[in-house]
Amino acid sequence: MGETFRALRSRNYRLFFIGQTLSLTGSWMQTVAMSWLVYRLTGSKVMLGTVALASQIPMLVAAPIAGVITDKVNRQKLLVMTQALALIQAAVLSALVLTGHVLPWHVIVLSAFIGIVNAFDMPGRQAFVPELVEDRKDLSNVIALNSAQFNLARLIGPVVAGVTITLVGEGVCFLINAVSFLAVIWALLQIHVTNERQVVSTQNPLAELIAGARYAWKIQPIRALLGLISVASCASGSLQQVFLPVYAKEDFKGNSSTLGNMYAAVAVGALVAAYMLAKRKSIVGLGRWIIISSFIAGISVGLFGIAPNVWVAIPILILHGFGGMKHMAATNTLIQTIVDDHMKGRVLSFYAMAMVGAMPVGSFLSGIMAAHFGSAETLLVFSLSSILASLLFIRAFPTFRQEIRPIYERKGIEFST
Image 1 (cartoon, rainbow, N blue to C red):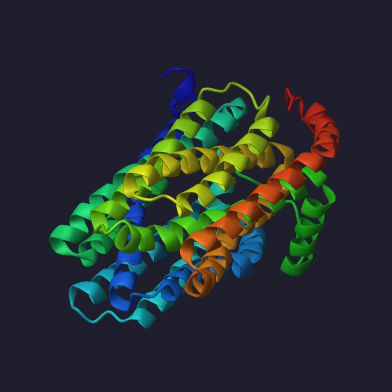
Image 2 (image 1 turned 90 degrees about the horizontal axis):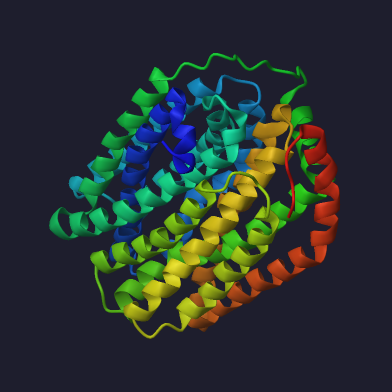
């Protein structure tokens, strides 16, 4: 398969990769259709932010609990359950839209439901996928391929959604998403994990949650990585979940296809970043890439706000996708290699909180700020906050290197930032 795709040599991971790619394509169709539906029904930036808040705020509340559960249960069965619930959510949403009965409050409630499901799915998936490869040295390649998979779906899904919405409406996008979950459920049922994971703690869930929080806070590299990704995600969430639909329809005078193309531009940049990461044979230099990529992502948010037309906006979004994906995947890789296995589910739930849970906060605040101060001004504020966080990370970088080195020496991992 070549070094770039070496993790696909593992049968279990290959099955999961194929099923998840199809499912994620449907999920991105739903993301675009949801934004377009809400803005069509309400014409409100605040409502766009509210729906984003409803779908992702459960990550802030439920993710820590989900992390504890992930460390205690069979992760494969947990993922089958979350995918089945996501299928039901998409089917209900499709039925409401296709029958003409959908109302804004329906969208908010169903968004909150899928947010709760994702709060359990994300840490479970992040912790389960490394178990699917036969060679643990392929971990960084797995994370890079997952990123490529995610962004390949983000490239294809929005474009198909834009055409589908124009031809037959948003309801069909939700229906296609519901059907796509069958692919990943089938793949999960075909996977056979030979090394059964042992539960290493019998503490009550609250004690385990506190232990996980103390563990993550005690290790400065984890603390620094989570802090930076949370601020960056606020900025990214405000851009992608609130302002892309607004700019596509109002500023650029486009339609659903315009929005799909803008999402696809982000995916193109992210795919380039994922390909570069997949070709890497070690984690050497990832710390420096986190600094560079976080600056790129933060600056591009402000530049998008002043883009005069869609032709200028597209290359800025490609740049944003590159920086955001490089930052996210490099952070994920470092956290996965730092954390001890028995704490992985809990720490990855904090990563989910920082990355996904921060997005609705940014979306909700940006919706309110834009209504009072304007879109470009709001994006500039989020851009500056992201740049400031990157500068603070640079200041903490010497300590970061000093504390991470003994962890990697103990694990026998080659390291250089």
